[in-house]
Length: 327
Ligand code: SF4
Image (spheres, rainbow, N blue to C red):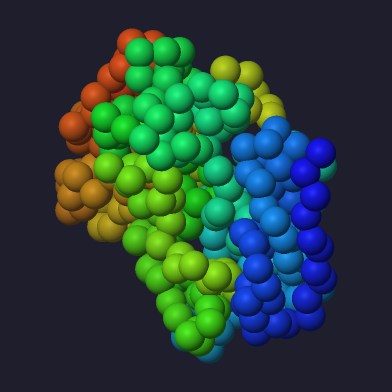
């Protein structure tokens, strides 16, 4: 049996400061990822810093039209919040498409951003996995790589998808992640927060050592926009995306005036489909345009032995979402 220390903190500064204690720490919020991985012996923190008592549970409108979300707002509370439902439908839909009711009640905004990959070889604790044990190899390349493995943003060292639905919607909306660390408070653009695996797949995010996410601030919603999240998966609940899309459009009659497209289930990080957006903006809406946008979204995709189906599926999840949203 492994033993670990436990500390309950009352402020972000205290949380960050508690890292001065010896050993490898981990922040405990909802625990829906961390406790699983500790039980599986994939993560072995020496010290759990319980941040559940921090005052980070508010969703607040800001004077400039943005919305600030505390890192400890539960996924359920965020999805059901009137501001989110009214102005950020895509975010509410994406959260409700993820996990189960019980998990959403416990899981937090900060924890969702920080969740780890669902690759079976990462979680089994014994297979070669560069993310769990740098330099050991990647059992998924050449192994079973169907549902939670990517076709965009992969490297020869890791091909696991980022599992979050919420993050895909936040990427489409645009956001800033506020972090507090030993050196003070800083902000990271959401698009830069998650890292591609490259040669260092064990580095998953832009947080510096000991930094804690305190808030996420969503950009002001695009005026007169409509938005939707579409998730395709093996079964209709409690399942990760094979391919998903978060789409926001502003229409000017039949013309696409503005568009944001982000994808889940296909990339090693939440994936912004900038080429699809460029194809859409200023063009006459219609199935030909939406098909072209779907193809552009998957530009540069590379399939592995069991997941080639994700390339046409990714195209379809963008095309269908655009078609339905503009119908
Ligand atoms: Fe590990 Fe990534 Fe390979 Fe999965 S895909 S075994 S997480 S290195």
